[in-house]
Length: 471
Image (cartoon, rainbow, N blue to C red):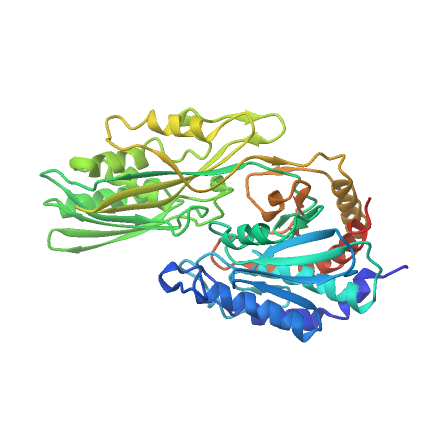
């Protein structure tokens, strides 16, 4: 059966964009403050899941909703014992500040679609859905069932997909359309380390509040602090000098009596690539650590402002390990908070290669405390390194399909990001970001190039048709 995958995609482009816009319009950010029994992750993720399943039901597909946290669409022979999985997600990161458009009002231009989730991961997930439509419309014969599974908590603790694997059988293999081409067959381990302690001050300058970061896997783009001092004019002048000396950042101050409110703007990017951003929190701490603080305020700021500042490989903590296959460790200081007389909190996110352990990382962070009476601990959702050999038929098949459709070089690679692909022993990540396309995941003004999304529909349709028939 010879199929022109690109032609079939072109016939469905208008419908694809309309369905994608309806999904992007939902603010599907996890919100525990609004969680209910019926919506365990808040109303947004549930609404997005219901939307994508309703689109599939409109088109006549078999669907299943599991506890409003995960759902799937299935095609293929119902009597087949085995199935292949395509794992996507409908939740998104918080939008952050300084968007040029409304983040949940999709804008379609001549060449791109702009909205939170356009590239991560609603655009690629909907591309996989339209690949399903092509296979179904053309009645392409499939050896196995195929499930397109949508999680609702990929950007946090993977609660939805964890639930799926608790109640459903394991797939034989599959891929996640939530990364980049040509393929991701290796993913570093992912661990959070938390520092949680008291927030006290001394007798001189007072740190009343400090806050940076929205999620552990985002480089903070904005940091804010409130300081009480008898030296407002001198400190404001020093801050302006600091900004001038660091042209990659910007900031403002607002003085009222003895209080100064600081706002510092860095560059918000995906936490898997912290070297491409500018961590607003550690920059602000780097400046504030030189004031006359006491108590744990001084320890908090010194820790953030010295060993944690401008070090995305953990070198100052002695954990800058490099593996020959998986590459180097990366470190992001994702969440930073200090509320006087209440709590000091720092959340690190490490992407580490095989050869290093979370305990090694904790030991490194502990080594730089310099008398600060806190204990770094492992917290949140941890993942061990994952690797599928380049010789595996699924890797070889997906690379061949990619090369056939694009003419571009096809090779295996390892990333620091974590995708649902690692949930399967023979799982990989496959697109939808092309090597020459801008990566705006987790950034303000997130967008996806329309041609990239269209190309991905065709690639996914052929890829699914072929991998379902692998031995």
